[in-house]
Image (cartoon, rainbow, N blue to C red):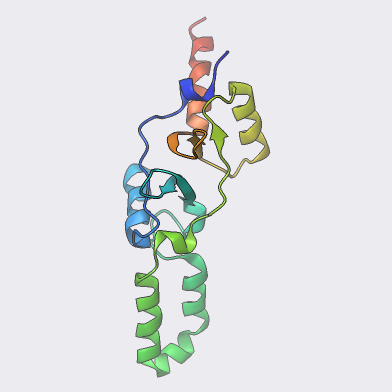
Amino acid sequence: MTTVKSIMSKKVFSLSPEMPLSEGAKVLVEHNFDGAPVVDKENKLVGILTEYDLISKESIIHLPTFQTILQNLEIFKRDRSQFQKEVQEVAELKVKDVMNSDPLTLPEDATFEEAVKVFREHHRVNPIPVIDEDRKVVGVISRYDILKPLHVLSDL
């Protein structure tokens, strides 16, 4: 029986909750990740930062904050100090400020079928952190990982 542990990516790029959001976004962009787990000092999962948490992969601006700036542009034109304050607030955002603090996870002994079902039911989620019984991140599984076993069919 194929388990998540046998197909997951064991090399995990994780983020710290205290990391500046701009650095977290940079990790996602540079590695072309849809998301990365956020872990504490003991490597325990505390959240996930995904592209959906950001305006786009090319941006490091948190969408709700960016919308606030745009909605108040006329005020900011009259009051440059307010605009600078808003920009400073964006610059000071940490990963923990925008991450999903209750991410979907899979245990490392989950079956391939269970993983497929989770991706089917939660089609916007990618990747999914794989955790052990202590909530420590042992890997991540993505849609790509789910498709890897299918290459056997092409060899038949």
